[in-house]
Amino acid sequence: MDELEYDVVVVGGGPAGENAAQYAVEGTVVDGRAMTAAIVEGELLGGECSYWACIPSKALLRPVSVAGLTADLPGVSTAHVAAKALLERRDAWVSHYDDSGQQDWAEGAGLTVLRGTGRLAGERTVRVASADGDRLVRARRAVVIATGSAARVPETYADALPWDSRDATGVVEVPERLVVVGGGVVACEAATWMAALGSTVTLVVRGHRLLSRTEPFAGEAVLASLRERGVTVRLGTSVESVRRDSPGATGTGRIHGGTVTLATSHGDLEADEVLLAIGREPRLDDLGLSSVDLTAEDVTSGRLPEWLHVVGDASGGPPLTHWGKHQGRVVGARIAAASAGEVAWEPDREAPVPQVVFTDPEVASVGLTEAEAREAGHDVVVTRVPTSSAAGTGLLRDHVVGDAQLVVDARSRLLLGATFVGVEAGELLHAATVAITGGVPVHVLRHAVASYPTAAELWLRLLEELPRELRTPPA
Ligand SMILES: Cc1cc2nc3c(=O)[nH]c(=O)nc-3n(C[C@H](O)[C@H](O)[C@H](O)COP(=O)(O)OP(=O)(O)OC[C@H]3O[C@@H](n4cnc5c(N)ncnc54)[C@H](O)[C@@H]3O)c2cc1C
Ligand SMILES: NC(=O)c1ccc[n+]([C@@H]2O[C@H](COP(=O)([O-])OP(=O)(O)OC[C@H]3O[C@@H](n4cnc5c(N)ncnc54)[C@H](O)[C@@H]3O)[C@@H](O)[C@H]2O)c1
Image (cartoon, rainbow, N blue to C red):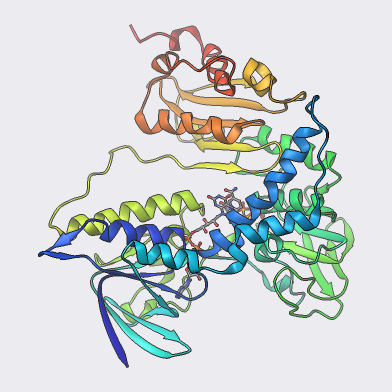
């Protein structure tokens, strides 16, 4: 069997793994020699994000959102979604599922790409299996697990071959009637683009609200908007069994067989396809963890030997590309510093996790919700204003929906969390992330002047709503 050796071996070439490898080797010279790293990738370099998740979903959603905007903006003619052109835009953004551009990037960054499936085969050792045979790859310094996550498919659904998020982002055949199970991010975003492509969408949600990890007002705004665009949303509804006529593995994005019948707690539903969007799980099975006496739980709880690291969705942390990339940069820098006998600098304050849900209206949040902050024992002050309350947001379209909210700790005067719903929500969020990361007290934040008339003036509205005693420095 061929044997290879690198300083760092990263298993999984998604955004998290790519960043870990890049930061480990970038400019790092040890004993007069540049650090080397290999990325082991079993499918497409660039990972789920580039081909089946963030990129195709946002390529599909942006024109839908712009078309909605033109219908609400006098002075321009109203645009309509053209399904074929929309799917072509998606295909262009996923480079027609060809990763040669990513391969070029990796080589340019000095990284070696090993094609095949990686499994741990003892300490600092990865066995890479491919059609050309197996290779044993040894890591002089570190191995990084960056294998991402896979959609959850419970037994109840398995025989019906439901769509998962890969089918929804890679849609080729648009089902006439689509049932989406789940009320989270994938469900809300996919319902938006599938309805725009012409499906009659029914969202079946087990809980009593959408986007349950965000502030209730955010889920309510998305619920109203989905209903307005013709999506039927059934809250508090559980799926008890699923039956399908002649299921068939027809390929990603194609309808997987005949009519699907879902028996729910509120009666039967029939559809041409069912999209399962009920969460994801770290991809840690079949990774050879037992060869180093570890379990999947050891990995997700961080109980790892010093030579082994985990980043991205595989870590069990927030399954978001930017978070996985951040973990990748931190771990890569730690490996680089340790190789040089140094310790990488890291801030004391834990970085907050931002997220933008690209529904229309957008939902953007960072840090703690009001409920989470109270549960954590903070002395909480909440300030909330309509998103329409700044001239800069009002100018952007005729009907500005949604609210913006800050959650502040009254004792420290620090921002604990922020939620923006509506126009420019995703862009308004970063100021909150900066304020939390930098520990900027709200009485100082009031002096960060936003230009008139931009959406950022919403910050002024929010900070003006704070109680007077929080608007000036403590005596
Ligand atoms: C529909 C959808 C939309 C999303 N939209 C967003 C968004 O807008 N913004 C956002 O921040 N996040 C979004 N996410 C989440 C985002 O896709 C993930 O958080 C991100 O892809 C995780 O990156 P990763 O590198 O950890 O894993 P992945 O991107 O999953 O990459 C892991 C890589 O490892 C490879 N691999 C796995 N096992 C092995 C093995 N044993 N050997 C070799 N290779 C292996 C896989 O082939 C894959 O290429 C979305 C997710 C979905 C499902
Ligand atoms: N814009 C973005 O940042 C973006 C977009 C898409 C996905 N993502 C990431 O991908 C991850 C996965 O997304 P997701 O929507 O699949 O998961 P999610 O965790 O956001 O939502 C899952 C939903 O399914 C429900 N659910 C769980 N088990 C169920 C069951 N057995 N039956 C019925 N309902 C059930 C949950 O209550 C929840 O409403 C998210 O956590 C998110 O971080 C991010």
